[in-house]
Each structure stands twice: as C-alpha cells, then as structure tokens.
Length: 119
Image 1 (cartoon, rainbow, N blue to C red):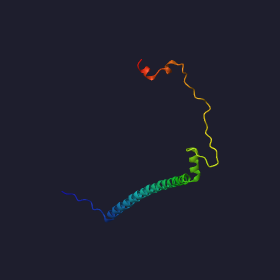
Image 2: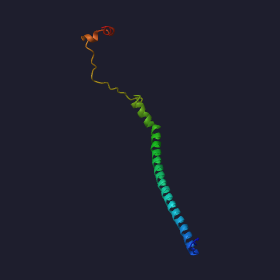
Image 3: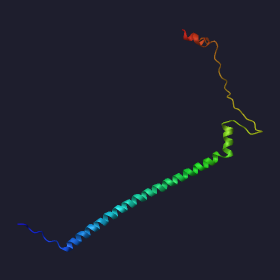
Image 4: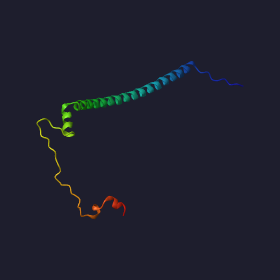
C-alpha cells in the first residue's frame, strides 16, 4: 500500500519561501558590498595614478619651458658649441702634459710595415 506523505501546513510553506527570499537578499547584499569595495579600491588606485600623471605633466611642462628659454639656449651655445658673446674672450684649455714622441732608435718602429709582413 502506498503511504501518504504527511501533510505540510501552509505556515511551514510560507516560512520556507520567506527563508529562501531572505537568503537571496542576504547573498545579493554581500555580493553588492564586495563589488562596492572592489570599485572603491579601483577608484583609489586611479586617483593616485591621476595625481602621479599630473605631477609628471607639471615637471615636463617646466622642462619644456626651460628648454625654450634663452638661458638654456645660451648654456648649450657656450657649453657644447664653445660660443662666446660679443666682447668676451674665449678660453681654450690645453693639456699641459706634452705628448711623448716615439723613440726613432727602436728597431721595430723603424721598419716599414710591409717588411714586418714578409718576415
């Protein structure tokens, strides 16, 4: 014979459905809180990156202004090109140590290069 299943009261059904709905909302709240935390962290990282890029932009802008200034152009003209202003005297520093000349009495150096090849 078939046994009858015990009858479930409508109160238990309502409580079960309510528990499922409450569980769903709890899970969705936790997921939303996690996502919000991730977005907040990303926002902080992006704000820090923006601040760094703004500082870099300011440094590059100052460098660009300096490279276009008369002060920089004069420094390059004097330092790299050796130019002087009208009325100034340019000074060229020459090494005080004399260069040593080869000793002509050395037999290896007095030979011609093709004689060294034919030995």
